[in-house]
Image (cartoon, rainbow, N blue to C red; front, side):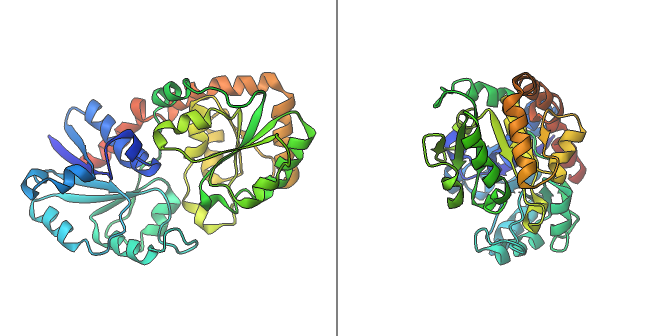
Length: 340
């Protein structure tokens, strides 16, 4: 029996952020449920602070999503003394080679060089990290839990009437939304739709409309994130291909949208195009220009049967192809078996 312990800040729903959920909690939960030869548990900050080394010891694998603390030699040495392996997971480029994210890029590179294995969400991220790691990083693609997302989203009450479209994301998308922002503004003035801005959106998007056709939704704990995402009918998943930081990004945003029946319009970005090639119900902009984005939005607005069809196909497609509960856990279990 292989024994795994995953470290997170906390184990409660309100304590897990997206990286911890997708890259530690969800895969370990499903591996523990489905792999008869693997026992996987999660320990949050409170449990760790009160536990002795003997209580935490005895595992074959220890894993966590993201770690910056370069002064981790004692921690790693104790894991090795007890015969364990430390796996660091990451789904974004935190080396700060191309973009400042936390100010701790140097420390993060140091950690990459010290852990036993590194897992990532995309091949480009594996290539970027390989120069720092002991072994070539292993790619484990992001998967979602469709049943959980649809269950939470079903509790959502519509905040605005009529058709909605817009952006959802973090500050790292500042440049990604620059090109579609202008056609987005035009759409809000040309058609009876409401624009939505969710998360930490750049200031320039606030100028997309000067009336009630633009609604801003603040950030929320990940546990109720599907409720906010369900406010969209169309989600604009824009990525700037010229930004080298984006080389490491995954396709998780359109996966989340499709899982709850929101139709994604996607950039011509490799991980997104891979979804389209696999038959996912997404809309690909013909070209990443203002006219390309305008026509993609306009097409979905005026063609309701097409939009509703894509919406209906989304949850089933994600459940079959990129769901951790049904198939995703197998990739993680195979990796864990391969390193013990």
